[in-house]
Amino acid sequence: MLGVRKAVFPVAGIDTHFLPATKASPKEMLPVIDKPLIQYAVEEAIAAGITELIFVTGRGKRVIEDHFDKSYEVEHRLKARGKQNLVELVQDIKPANVECVYVRQAEPLGLGHAILCAEKLIGDEPFAIVLADDLLDGAPPVLAQMVHIFSHYDSSVLAVEEFDSWESTTHGVIDGRHWDERVISVSRIIEKPSPELAPSSFGVAGRYVLMPSIFEHLRSVKPDLNGEIQLTPAIHSMREGEQVLAYEFVGKRYDCGTKLGYVQATVDFALRHAELQETFDAWLRERVGALQLGAWATGSMLNQPAPGVQELAH
Ligand code: G1P
Image (cartoon, rainbow, N blue to C red; front, side, top):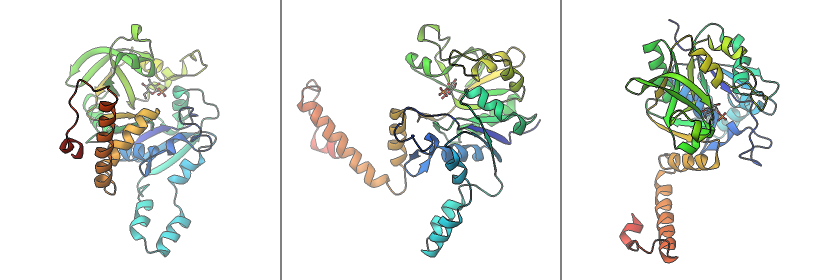
């Protein structure tokens, strides 16, 4: 059995949640602290043993190519200032054994269509799909967990997590039965159902390890009401002929396609960032204390005791 060597990063999509920030720059380049979302996604893939990164890009996304390319100018300037540690930091963005390949999706015709654009580059081998706006924090990294499950069962694997029922409208939702600890055999998958139609509370997070047979199913998917070809119906059709597993990954998902998820990721990552950890932690505690005091003073916490000085300080 071939290992998983290739990963597709669909990055052609146009963002509306972060305008005006994303008017001229790709949403995948939004930084969480000091690293763009796409770099977190790439690091996760590399940690899972992926050595070929296939970016499905579109207009206005050239800066992603530049990010993973060598920058002689930046390196030269840093060297001239004696900042060797920063030279290494920019050089390490793409390890030497990893190759980046780019293919254009001329029109934003959906996730399934983006994956089809990578078909020739994938060929006849299993591959991963990584959606960079889902920032997954896991140890081991979530894609590495999935590659392990994939190799063990020799079946396609989707990352899933339990969500609140109203979130069904933002996820692919699965139905199935538990096969093993954290492993569910998928019997059905529906794209973004209303809460009444959701078959379970397990939604797909943006990581997939798929058999190449997905391409034949993608080719027969009909466009949805927005004229887009989705990945979910192709997976549904695929599981009629072969086993598809869902894996409840160990870790935390930040939906960085939304402002709330993005801010939550920023706060959590700042709390363990070498440079910020201490100062940010102190600032946050002070801020939370002030917010509690404010809430208490305005009556919304009248039934709760006012926080003591000690509590506020720690
Ligand atoms: C896509 C998929 C959806 C999945 C989600 C995870 O939706 O179509 O099935 O649950 O990613 O983030 P999107 O977020 O691109 O609308």
